[in-house]
Amino acid sequence: MSGILVYTEKEARRNAFAVKKFTEELGVILVDENYDGDADFVINRTNDYRVAERFEQRGIKVFNSSGLSKIANDKQLCYDVMEKNDIPIMQTRYKGAPVIKKAVGGSGGTQVYMLESSEEFEDGFVYQKPCDTLGKDLRVWLVGGEIIASILRESDTDFRSNYCLGGSAVLYELSREEAELVKRIADMANGDYIGIDFIFNDGKLVFNEIEDTVGARMVYDKTGIDIIKIYCDYIKKQF
Figure 1 (cartoon, one colour):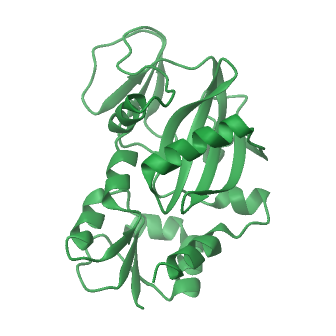
Figure 2 (spheres, rainbow, N blue to C red):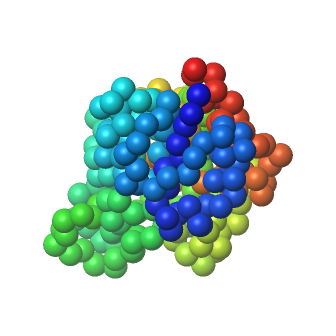
């Protein structure tokens, strides 16, 4: 069984720990997004669904699939899918103020802005009503649809709570109702290894986004869980 691990050159450098874990556990070969050779399976860590599609069209199994990658990396599309399936979200295409403006393909809290006045909608951005609890969110990691870890992130200085931007992080125990919401979204997403992010509004979880190439730094920092090994063991069981 021979596999490839696809990262852009920049992201491979930034995620050296994950690259090392994947290669040790699975013996995969690291390639960039332009690789078009053979493989028994592909781990796509590019956030580009077209990379996955290229291999799937040749009958090669890709983790995560192009379908999941396409939805997860287009925020407006993802919100529309969730709303259609009765998953709670904050209103998008919002014309009021203040309003959160974020790039449809942004990640890690980049290209996210809090606007104090409304503006004409700009292509490539989501305009969303803010929640009532800023600077606080929850990330849930899943492998094969099973919940592995949940961590609450908070920031006292920024409406964005991303750990990479300096937010704090603590373990969080999901209530039964919250776990059921996570599982509903996971069943729809049908992802192999994903993160699901939630914000808080009126004291309840509200869907925020799916992380296709979810990072694992918080899990390793805050728990004893070797989540990449769990993911690699899951991949092995598919063959």
